[in-house]
Image 1 (cartoon, rainbow, N blue to C red):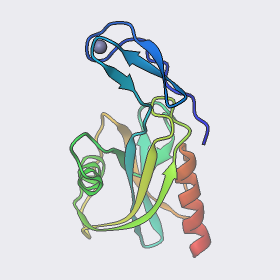
Image 2: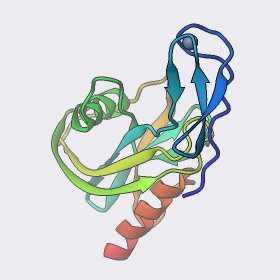
Image 3: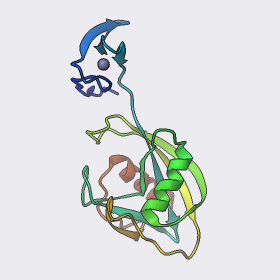
Length: 171
Ligand SMILES: [Zn+2]
């Protein structure tokens, strides 16, 4: 997949302007002071697909990209976290519920986030405890709700749309 490399100008360690060097035939940003080469790499996100009684649990985004659209609960894996730890944390933060079971579903490479081009989104089928209420983190989301799989609200992320489509086709 062809993606544009973020155009970093300054060294994140010493703050001096980055130079350039050729390494293995590739042009790399380089800080001679810190002897640090910038190798572009991608982040990882975990997404919780929570389905119950033909309904999916979605949250409404309060931030860009796709502010005002709906998505499965999820977020970036933080430094030092394992993907499942991040999944547990995100579900707790965004739905107010504990994960009781998680099964890996699929991995997508995301191209529609300018802040984190090419990041991997790991989708999991997630079970949460029965009968619990739902409450979402008001900083990240403006709403939360259960929606019929066949008539979801407007979804922003392309990968989330694809997974919704798969859920619809599976039935
Ligand atoms: Zn430096």
